[in-house]
Figure (cartoon, helix red, strand yellow):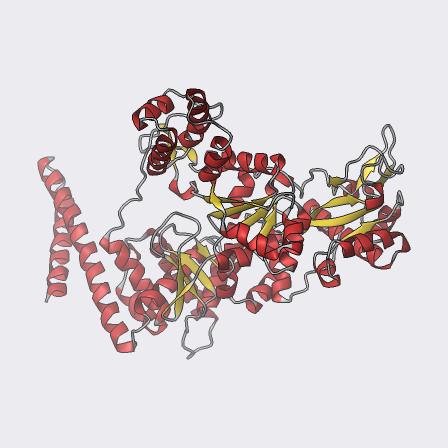
Amino acid sequence: MTSAEDIKAKLDIVEVLREYIQVKPAGRNFQALCPFHNEKSPSLVISPEKQIWHCFGCGKGGDVLTFVMEKEGLTFGETLRLLAPKAGVQLQEYSPEKASQKSRLLDILQTASAYFEQTLLNSREAEEARQYLVTRGLTDEIIEDWQIGFASDSWDDLILYLKSRGFNESDIFASGLTAQKAGTSRYFNRFRSRIMFPITDVNSNIVGFTARVLPSNDGKDGPPAQAGMGKYVNSPQSAVFDKSKLLFGLNRAKNAIREQGYVIIVEGQMDAITAHQFGFKNVVASSGTALTQEQIQLLDRFTNNLLFALDADNAGQMATDRAGEAIASFDVSVVEAPDRFGRLKRYIDPAKSYKKNIKVALMPSGKDPDECIRRDRAGWIRSLAEAKPLMQYYFDKILAPLDLRQASGKKQGAQSILPLIGRLPNPVERDAWLKKLSSLLDIDVKYLYEAMAELKPREGTRPPLTTVSFSPEATSHEAILSDYLLALVCRFPNYLVFIFENVLPEYLQSKSSQIIYNNLILYYNQSRDALSSGLNFILNYQNFRDWLLNSLVPESAQALDKLVILGEKEFSGFDETQASIEIKKIVNDLKRSYLNSRLKELTNLLADLEAQNGAKEELDSLLVEFNNLTQEIKKLLE
């Protein structure tokens, strides 16, 4: 058994998918809203018996590996790496020759983190770091759980350790753990005499570090190890670390975010760690920067409800402002695609457009979330409960210092707030906030509408759109029956020979079903030849699926999954008798439809030949086929 097969065998597809989407029982199966396209009613069906899934809306489907690859945007190898620990499967040991660079960098960072942890735990040099973490209220369990460590003052201890574990200097440098001395080929430790906070991606891979200088060096130039470096420094951007695409603690918070329906966003990493220690598990940190569009898209997997819990200072408020701008610009996704005439059009893609519910909670004066949680838990909870919608926060912040009795105050307030209202994508929201502003400024709302209409578009705003709707081609009744017939055969394989004897491939009007049927005939004949005389062929779903994967048409395996799930979805309550009646009825309908279609073709051919004085032999041949088809159709109708 390969690692992939072992992982799939040990994981329950329903439980894995439940980490990403809300699944509900539907008979023997489960169903959910598909995360890969925009829909209001669930069309994604999960079969726990077959350990497969299929969406009848967008057509995507497969096994647990396929779903995670699609949802996380991972390669096959990265997916195995993510799921192996959950399945309790040990992947092959590290091999520098076989591992991709990304995998090598992740291995290096994980190894370095363990080294930093041991240094914090055992080194005399780390005593000050240990005392600092204690004074910040962190327990031993939290320090261990968050893998906090310490980088010694050495220039090369980490390099030597990693090299002893089989890693080369080039990859260690690429991971961001070392720097290179100018004009030389010599490397040295990037982080020295610092408390190390690992930064993980949403899948719990360590991708970088935030390093805090020791408290004794706060506000000083420090020893040579710290000269020219700030209080906090991060890993440089690398093949695995991009700060704009990460949120500190999201890997730990994502389940709580789904359960509670919203995420709390703080600035500092200590804020997030303290929040988790005190039981607020749906907290992530933006690491002191404004939220980016990539981070917003990342959060969209888990919730549309964002609550910013920030310091009540200018920096915190500026971060909220910039986050609001990023979210507003990301509410509507504009894409380009050809229309049915091949012309390129810009349109709003509802599957990629986002609408966020944003609130802001300001901490009591002079406190950050970390201090507030530790010293004033009630104040923290109260701040969250009193959080204001983002636009209300802007109203209060902008209008509070103005004298709205004066014309100058009214003008300044309108000039500051109208651009914010103008970037709201929902016209109902814009109208509500304009009316509120009208009331506060005591200005007729029509003048505010006029003023907002005259605002120049901000740089980088969305261009005018041509909205184009794309609808899939209608599926014929015969195509649906074709899928139903093979779905029934997958569920009741005893009728396979009956189908072979009564259904020609051309009877099937679904392209995917026709491909499956042709391959099923080949598979049947090959299997029969391999069986000993007298043994009956038994269709086994997994064996046939494996055969498809090893054939020249591996994509048909997904089509087979669709048919299997369709059979469980539509015919779960059928017994053998009901299945027999339904199969014979569908075969009859498909055959009659095909014969009628062929009869129309013959009618047109005969008319053309007669008009062109065609050869008598050809006319006679077509007439014979025409009469035979007519007789067959009569028999079907009897």
